[in-house]
Length: 284
Image 1 (tube, rainbow, N blue to C red):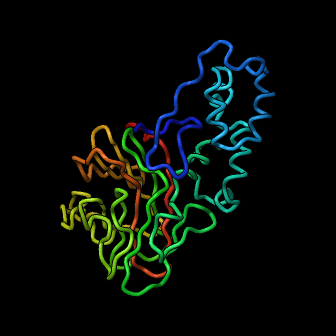
Image 2: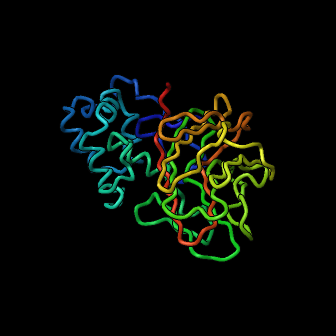
């Protein structure tokens, strides 16, 4: 399976893993008269379509593909963004690091799954924030709608409430549990997940502590509201973290060739965690 591209085919809601969309249609008569329509007319028509329909349109011919992908802030993406995303997500700073309407649509497609989380959490109306209910003696997590088996991907995670005794960010396969009894580091508790506990700065996998992170003397503790950038490289099989645009280093190496999902786990009642997919990480 391939990584999502910046185009309309870059996300597929409900799919197990992201897959690269095929290229634009190359047949000279593929679109017929539609291939000769002015871009402004096509843009108007496309602005009424949903994402799945836009994916199909992008495959018709090169002219349609260029019309869809040439401007990430076109009326097509602005209209789809307004229809797909909650007003709260658009008027607050949740998506402030996304430069275009198309990037915002893509982030929503990669947000937390309402169907793949603990029964003790729910996804707020903004579509990006997890709220943990005040349930005693339970650790609760959530995965995103889409996982990755190829490519390089980055997303931001931040806590908007107390961490409690355990607050873990990382990745998990589909087999990793998203709920367990007690207050534990759920991500990293088995061989199906990898996590960084922000409370004690420990790296966790297969039920064991894999050392402290970042590897420096007197590493600062996580501050509420601080955005952590997670970088998954499925080509090099590594997971790394950044804080405040400072690269903290590679946390895990030798990741398996599997479909891996961004995930979090929390224990504190009424705490909230937001996750926003950014796309391909910038080098440097």
